[in-house]
Length: 123
Image 1 (cartoon, rainbow, N blue to C red):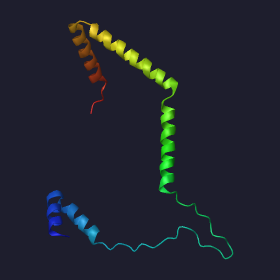
Image 2 (spheres, helix red, strand yellow):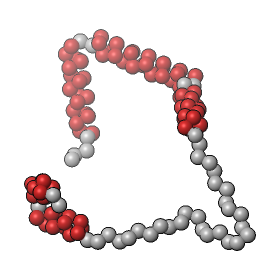
Image 3 (cartoon, rainbow, N blue to C red):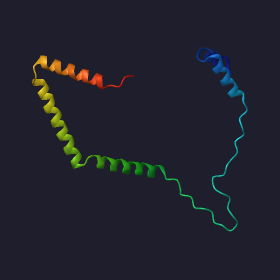
Image 4 (cartoon, rainbow, N blue to C red):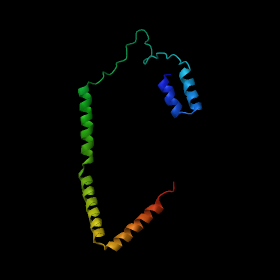
């Protein structure tokens, strides 16, 4: 190992961890053998047909189709109606809170914070 590597290891790792790392680096690696992906062909048997890799243009076209399909699915009329209703409910609740006197609003906020803190799991 280079001197700089050893210096950093001495700062960041304890002795036992350094020794384990050095032992692992010094251990001989087993030679990897090439494993054929297809089984050997028997005489008289035709080679299996491989699907050609799609071109970059085909990949982009497929991605665009998938993105368009997900966008169309996300913007259904029912979903838009539900979003609009939720925004109206939120606006009404915000208006109700704004109409409360300052003292009641502070008490309500304090109660909400206490409720939130009690519902949190201890960690």
